Image (cartoon, rainbow, N blue to C red):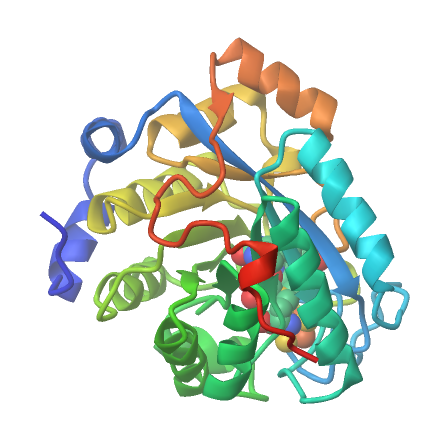
Amino acid sequence: MIRNDWSFDEVKAIYDTPVLDLMYQAATVHRQHHDPQEVQVCTLLSVKTGGCPEDCAYCPQAARYHTGVKVEKLLPVQEVLDHAQRAKDAGSTRFCMGAAWREVRDNRDFDSVLEMVKGVNTLGMEVCCTLGMLTQTQAQRLKEAGLYAYNHNLDTSEEFYDDIITTRTYQDRIETLANVRGAKISVCSGGIIGMGETHRDRVGMLHTLATLPQHPESVPVNALVAVEGTPLEDQARVSVWEMIRMIATARMTMPKAMVRLSAGRVRMTTEEQALCFLAGANSIFAGDKLLTTPNPGTDQDQELFQLLNIRPRAAFKNGQAAQIKWEQIPSVV
Ligand code: SAM
Ligand code: DTB
Ligand code: SF4
């Protein structure tokens, strides 16, 4: 039932299905593999903001664009752990720490991130990081510190990639994903729509993800947040039907993955978000900020959950890697 041999045309045929039929089919597959009343609540925190040397055309944190994002150094470990505790108290079961780095370097900042990972794991949350490119050894060190998942997005298709990022290659991304997988860390990888890509590019990205040797456990689908000062500042907002097509196609081709309705929720109505859940999304980012841009606040999401009779999913439910206990973690620094 789980296939890694999808052809491009098969994925395209799913994506091109009349939208109501596509939703119905995806909702059916969703119910075969997941409890449709459960949605995972994750919290993001930017632990190192701005000043990034890369040229990702969508990103407010790239140093070369003038977006008004203030450059900050790495947050202190305790501040991050306090934030994680508050996220847990508000119902989050996964905590993802983001850094505006091109890649991880073996320095004191990385040692501090390892301490953050240890600490968040101890809180009993699924701990995730998104820190840029990783070597096999760095992935291993993160795993030993208790890292549960690593986010590294393909962002778009291989063909469109060079129009968006020139400072690293698609192959670099695939290699980082392989390093994460090699360290037995859960893989989170998806992309962004609304950057000027074609439908073929969207299908191409999903096809690449769905034909990896093992599907990512988590697939974030982001709608571009067009930030003033970035090269994509004038991009038109994507329609909810396009998000639905992406979510449903991800759900049909990677049935077991958590499909995350990620950036862009702040501009969606309750009804639009409900359609995304129906199409197979079963995870969101909570809290009033993503990394640097706004997100619906906790109160709004609590209302959404009550209205739709959704409950937050417990941590570590896929059982593939249970929480690593503090005593089992070797010293990492
Ligand atoms: N620097 C690391 C990297 O690029 O892998 C980690 C942080 S980066 C901000 C994580 C992801 O956020 C990107 O791969 C991209 O998919 C998403 N992202 C960044 N800016 C965005 C925007 N304006 N709208 C939607 N998604 C965005
Ligand atoms: C992902 O796919 N989306 C999140 C998370 N992974 C790191 C990030 C969205 C960032 C949106 C722009 C910002 O807030 O800076
Ligand atoms: Fe840097 Fe990541 Fe933003 Fe690209 S997406 S500019 S690598 S922070």
